[in-house]
Image 1: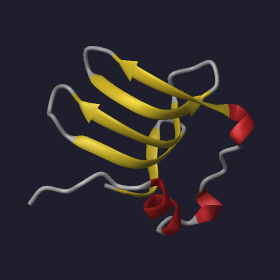
Image 2: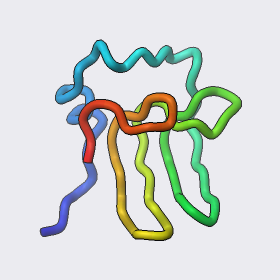
Image 3: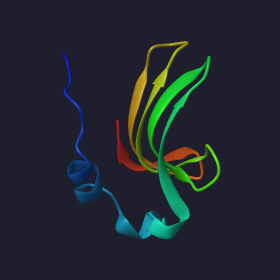
Image 4: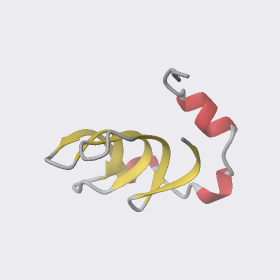
Length: 79
């Protein structure tokens, strides 16, 4: 079965808002491409640390991870 993209609204509506702890002044939108991953979404300002809503594609396994990220790790609702 093929899944379509997950929406930001779906992520936020299905997540524990108390786990977010992400302030809009501390994040920026980025596209990151390296030999391991392709990521589009929010990161901590001035870094490549995933922090906020984003989509990561592993170039090694082909797996796709979409959801809410905190301190570089999936946190809350996602797939």
